[in-house]
Image 1 (cartoon, helix red, strand yellow):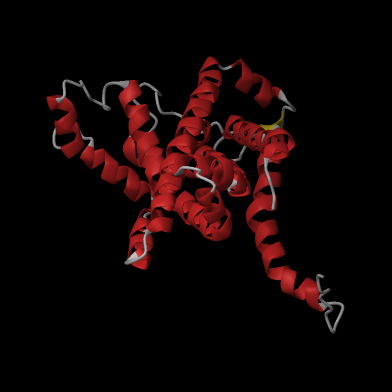
Image 2 (spheres, rainbow, N blue to C red):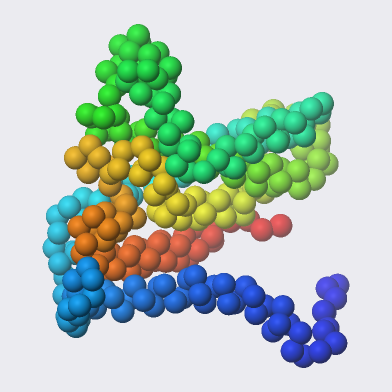
Length: 294
C-alpha cells in the first residue's frame, strides 16, 4: 500500500519545484524559443539587418547536400557510440557484481572516465592514436594497419567514436551494476539448482530483468551521442578531415560561428531537436513495449 504525501501548505510543492522549473525555463525553453525565432529570420552577424524569411532557412538546409550527408554520418556515429558504450558497460558491471573483495575500489576506478571532460577524453585518445607518437598507433602500425586519422576520414571517425564511447562506458556501468544488484539472488540460485548454466541464467533471467535499465541507457546514450560529443569532436578533429567527422551538432556550430550563417544554424538546431525528440518518441512507442517491468 502506497502512502500519499500530504503537504501542510498548498503552496509548498510549487516553491520546492520553482528552482528546477526556473532552470529549465532559462536554460532550455528560452534558448529553444530563441532558436525557433531566429530560424525564421535572415540577418547579418551583427544584427543590423534583419529580415523575416519564414521557412526559407529550412528549405535551404534540406537542399544542402552536405547537411544530408551529415544526417547519415550522425546516425552512424550515434549508433556506434551507443553500442560501444553499452556492451562494455554491461560486461564490466557483470564482472563487478561478482567481485567480493575490493569491490568498492574496483567500482570507483571504473567511474573515473565519467569524471573526465569530453575535450580531455578526446585529447587522451588523440595522443594514444596519434600516427607519430601514439602507443596504440604504434601497435596498429606493427600489425600492418595503415592508421592516420589526420588524412583518412574513416580513421578519424573511429577515433571520435572510441573517445566518445569510452567516456560513456562508466555511466552505463554504474546503472547496469545497480540493476544487477537489485535482482534477487534467489532467482539465480533456483536456476542454478535446476541446472541452468551461467550464460543461460544471464540470457533468460538477468538480461530480461535488466531491460528497463537497458532501455533507459539506450535513450540516454543516443541523446548523448547527438549532443554531448561536441567537445570530443572539436578537440580531436574539428569536423575533419574533409568534414568526415562533422555531425549535426558540430555543423550547427560550424555554420553559426565560422560561417556566420545565424538563420541557417538556428534552423539546423531546430531540426536537430525535432530529430532527437522524434527518435525518443519512437523508442518509447515501439521498444518500450518489449521492456519487462517487475
